[in-house]
Every structure is written in structure tokens, then in C-alpha cells.
Length: 410
Image (tube, rainbow, N blue to C red):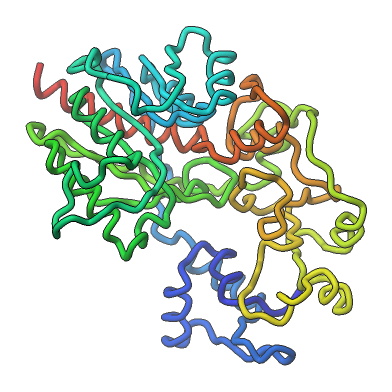
């Protein structure tokens, strides 16, 4: 395994931002050196792993339990539902799904196959009117895609966001008028358009009568998910409500790939066999040479140059290329395709991508949750999903909020 790692790799390894690592460097806690071959600033892997033990997740509480029993029957309307990761998580937390909207026909078939009793509204959200749910739903959730707005004036209003999917999310919240709404998105929304997009979303929710709780990025590995995935959570509380919302508390225990695929705390059995993508022979021959937790820099130099081509001489860690996951680490974030060169996720022992059921396990879907469509469609649905266990923990936080709100108003 490579003795030196780049800033990007160190950041990924210990779950801290590059800025934090640079600050530690300045403070003398972590010293970068020049790599002999490339002259890039790199870190000694051993030093980072030692620091990892000292710094990583130091602030996480021990003995956390987010579980909260619902005092009433609470209902959720889900938008941009995908294959149901968030909806299943909410269901596990005791929230009843009254309707789900999704445009992708295969994801809709997946939802119907697994929950025939769910009301699945298939099609473009723009074509649906949700006013029948006015004052009848406790929470509206949705993983709206991040899109640029047109900025007419300094304070973005609902009208300026027309044509974007966030506009539709806000329109539905306005039509339904729930006590709380929850949007989720990629971490990149924080910096999209230098933060203007997020500020615009907050001002739109303010305009339709919702105060936004300070935005947080939740790391899935802190919520019983064996995967380094991050989701930005946007929580709006109706302005007539003075109850506080609290994000779910992170857990101390970090689960790894072995916990995902083998019998243990997360699952009662080893992962079931299923179909999976295959590597072409030429790629398999290269990946056969990569050790667990290794990547392209662990290949012989001649093969590195052949495999990487011109990008061998460019800067940056490119840590996802020819990457083999280790049993004792959480998986890197899954993508919609299991064998993309930039985001390789190779099985620890076998030289192959993860199978469909392994993908589902890493996203904490139950084994009986079946995905419809071609194998490529199934991978896409799973890769796009909110991890089920993260959805459950967020669900508990919503139940806690609703219990408090209704007890104050009973």
C-alpha cells in the first residue's frame, strides 16, 4: 500500500475537510512533505492514520439513541421519492406515507412492487395538484435536485424560482401547509453559485411561511450506514409553531463493509446472491493487482502510466480510480453506475463491482426490497437513494418534533 497519500485522500480517509487538514498542517499537528516523484505536497499514511484515531469524530456522543415512539398517527407526503430509501426509513420510524411522487417509471414500479398499498403518483410533479392534502399531512419531504435560479433582484422569491424543481417543492409545501418540511440534497448545494442557491431556497421558504433551521450536512456513517455518504438537510418549520427541531444525534459506532455484507449487527444473514455488473478482461487484469484499500497508485509504475494515460501527469489525488474497498472500512459513496473509472468501487476479495444486492446492503435497504427494471436501472435507483438507516434516524427526529408540537397544542 502506498506510503504517501494526497490531501484529497487524507480528507477522504478521516472524514475531515481539506481546510481542516491545512489548518492542522499550519498548527503543526500534521506535517505535509514533498512526494519524491511528483513533488506534490503529500502526507505519510501512517501519520494520518494515527491522527485519525485522535481526531476523527471526537465530538460524537457515546450511548446515543434517537428512537422516539410516535404519540399519534403521523403522515408524510414524499416528493422525488426515487426507489424509496427515505420513505422506507420514515416508515421504520413510524411515519405513514400517504402519497409519493416520482417521475422515473422504474422507480415507481419498484415502489408499487414493494408497497402495493402506497399511493404512487407517477409523473412530472408540475402536473400534480396536492391541495387535497391541505392541513392533512404532518410532513412533506423531498430530495429535489440542485438547480440554478435566475436572480431577479437581491432577495429571491418564489416567482423567480419558477421552472426549477425547488419551486415545485415549495409550491407543494405551500399547498399542503404541514407543520414541518424536510428537503435533502447533496453537500455541494452549500457552495452552489457561491451559496446563493441555498440562500434563495431559504428566502423562498421564508416567503411561504416557514423558518429554516440552520442547515446541516449529515454524514451517513454516523447514522448506522456503512458508507461515506453525505446529505444536506434543509428543515422548514411553519412560522406559527414555536417547537424546536433537533437533528438526530450521531452515533459513536462506525459500520464497515463487513457489517454491510456479512451477518452481524446490521443484518441477520450474509448478503443474498444476485446479479451484478462485470469488468472487461483488460480492466480486471489491472484491478487484480490492486490490494484491499488500494487504488491506481498501488499499481506497478509502468501499469499506472498505461492505465491512467495523460491524467497520470496531472495533479489531484484521483482517489476513486482503480479503487478496491477494504472489509474494515465504510464503503465510499455509491454512484449510479458500479464501474465508472473515476469512482471505482471494487469488491475486497473478488475483482468485480458490487452486485445489486450488495449495493442495496451498502445503502441499508432490507433484503426483501426488490428493484424493478434492467440491471442498470436497478443500480441507478440504489445509487440515487437516501440510505434507509439515515432516513430512519431523520424520521425519529421528525417524530420527536411532532410529539412535542402536538402535546403543546392538545
